[in-house]
Length: 147
Image 1 (cartoon, rainbow, N blue to C red):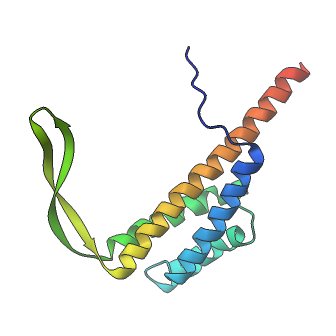
Image 2: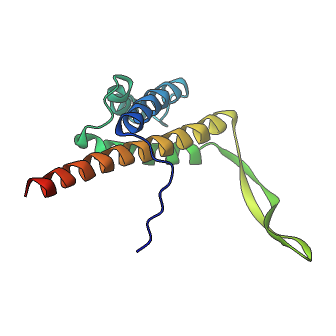
């Protein structure tokens, strides 16, 4: 088994990043009025309220965060205003540039904001999961040492 050591963050740094990203996510979602209707806007606001209060680790939020991801995706889908073909490079070799044509959506200004929210959400979820994983690992080591 090969173990690669990548850039290692302390538990405090991981948790601080999750808290910061949670607050950033709440601010961005509020500014964009995340949700396509009053029900979704209210649900998103309630889900994000705990994040704005610096509490991103409640296990009861797992289902709400999954629903929030679905709201972001559905809201983003409603902001597509067309499609354009773009050349995307896949690799480069001795014969030059290679690629393919892809149909890429064109978004409204709000759609661009929602893409940024989706990216913040992904980074938040990664930081949250990394923090919870580190805590679980430390608990497992403590249990192992107590035997």
